[in-house]
Image 1 (cartoon, helix red, strand yellow):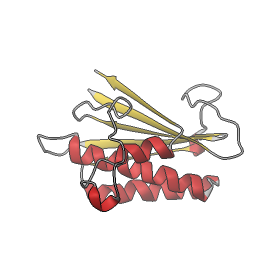
Image 2 (image 1 turned 45 degrees about the horizontal axis):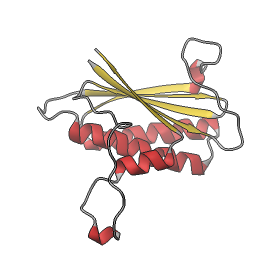
Image 3 (image 1 turned 90 degrees about the horizontal axis):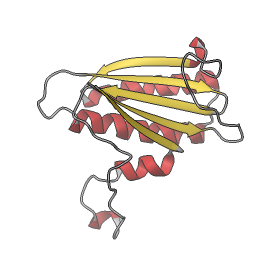
Length: 154
């Protein structure tokens, strides 16, 4: 079983296209990159490094990269922290693809199911020092990204 969460961010001043691998509108091999990491928080930096290098190679604007970087960091961190309650070593695959105007990040893991698009996000109440630690990751992701899709495959 795998969970797949596609995170998409439109780039400014460019038209959008849906990424579907294997079609004429899909990315060429040099416009995609992948990394497989283990379920350890130290691996989040490897994902960030790949995203930075990919964005630099393809001219992704810094503002868009910053937003995507925060969202991907939150998503991968949440997978590591919550998807494997039984512990053990697991793999998380991260796929990046770019078509004109659209950067798509696909995350895949074999952890417990969690649909970030259906989860209830608690409204912001009070200041940061009044809020419990945690719980803002989904809010950040929904605010910073143009699109988030969840799919579970058996």
